[in-house]
Image (cartoon, rainbow, N blue to C red; front, side, top):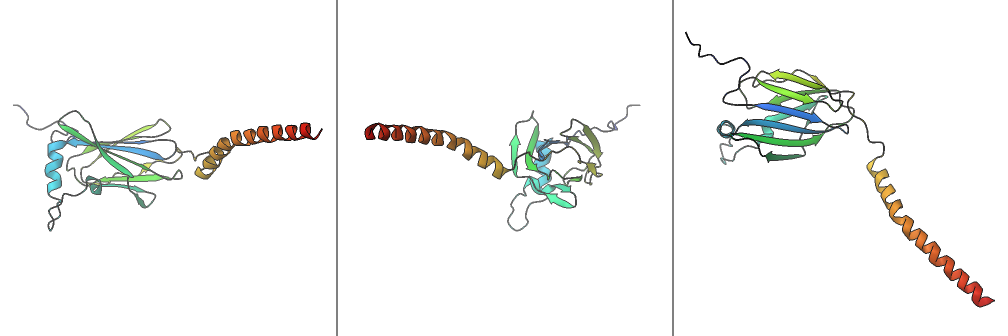
Length: 184
């Protein structure tokens, strides 16, 4: 007798996949991929009843780091293989971050969350649909910049001033020599 049950771990309709990749400076790229038609229909149930406006996709995603919500700084839709759509979100964590919890309020079926740490380790967790992840250790992978923004700006200004100072010395020196020659 043929079984109609789908294999464990399959995500036939939603096709949800989440990848969170970190860089050494604490920046992250979060890619959330779903079936485009499923996502469009799922967002309809969250429309504003008064205005009919569709909700922002990012409003359904939560990164909770060390007890505080971290919002993405940018969100874009990137090309995916049809029928999939991927939302790419970028942002930053403090380099002192220790623990992250993840929540995505649209899926119903379980889906994989893959975390690519800046130190090369990869952590994959199966999220039970509309549920929070377990705490994910994000500590020890970030490095504070060796020079801050103010220090970097000062270095750039100094480098730009070097030719001006050298030129002024050269011009000033030749003027003094001309004066000495005229006085003799």
